[in-house]
Image 1 (cartoon, rainbow, N blue to C red):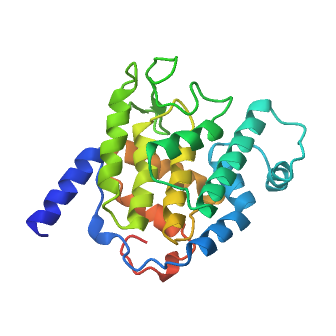
Image 2 (image 1 turned 45 degrees about the horizontal axis):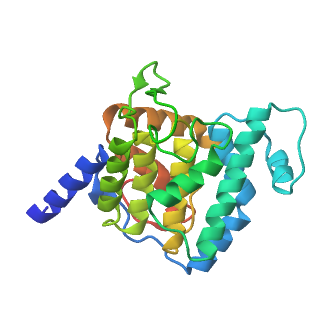
Length: 263
């Protein structure tokens, strides 16, 4: 590795707070027309929302998610579960609209506007970074192994998290789009910019980044929920994203076409 390349990686990893084996990342990602990629994402709306809700342990079935998308209420569920699914539907539809209109941008405004829909009525200060709103409290993430992951502290005004996002985003924008999108999904999850809904928002931003560059979206299948949670737990502890990157690559619809050591 050249000295310049090593320096670039050092700045990238320092800004994000984690690292991965960049040499193993695929460089032959199929790229299509942006409209085509966004159309395909729209066609898989119900599948994407259901998979995302299942990763959260939500009990809504696939047919019930389809019913909510059609604007029909479903009985027999807790209001909080319904609100979670409705947040996923609304935020995904908003991302599709932004992409369709050519207005999707990888910036804090887009992240916070999508989060405001993802976590409406569920999270403290939805649409604001921790510390920007009325609530000032620290958070932690419960891991399957009994440990807890503690992200950066909540500071009044949220400037520490704003700076973290801006510095990380600046480094991420230098990466190839596919790597950039996947890395952001982990950056958002690890940084915990919001009080809740971080992984949901980060995966949606990931897909916005991918689609805006003509790359098909990724949905993590509900059947791989345990594997996803285990690898995320390991990532939080080790701060090495190599395995999580490989997992996300394997969930891409064109994974079998990518020649990479991480799949």
